[in-house]
Image: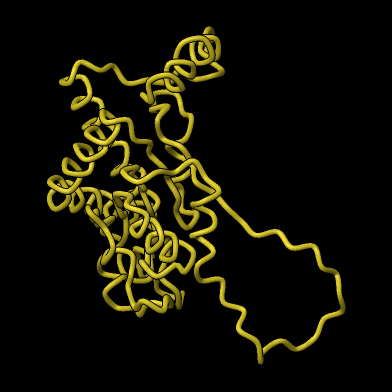
Length: 244
């Protein structure tokens, strides 16, 4: 069997595991978002860089209501390099300032992703968002997250701060396959399932909103004839007015 065939087999098993174990959580997440949006809330997405906060944002066939949350601290201070190991340089709590500077409000929904569940920036953001009164949906690998410690002073990992946890079913350490002659395992898995999970959540959001008599703003591909015009003239203005 070619390595390619082994990979395809492992991917099929991975998706089957998501479908058989995470259906209830996917539905719960979709209903939570639909309820929040129906009440005027916004939906924010931030992850540790593995597909999600790009995959769902402004895509043909995607929802306009998904909005990336991104922040950084820019410091311009070109002094000479010195040893600063004796100083406290923790960035813990920076997320609180980011939330204050953002458009977030209590009752909004945060979709947060970290495969390990311990990515410091994401954990800090979840901690502060929960304090602010936001609803938190987490996409993580429970196999991975339960084997590591939190770097946050709270001692909490991402899944421990969530209203809904969706397990992306990735193995601890991410990679799917052992290959003879290679020390590391091969082919990361979490991006594949995270994208599948959140498009699945999207179907639930759409169905739930339409049950409530609200038609969600679904984008057309900007490069498809008429797509950009449709998005700019119809979808975007309605989102600004109605939040959907």
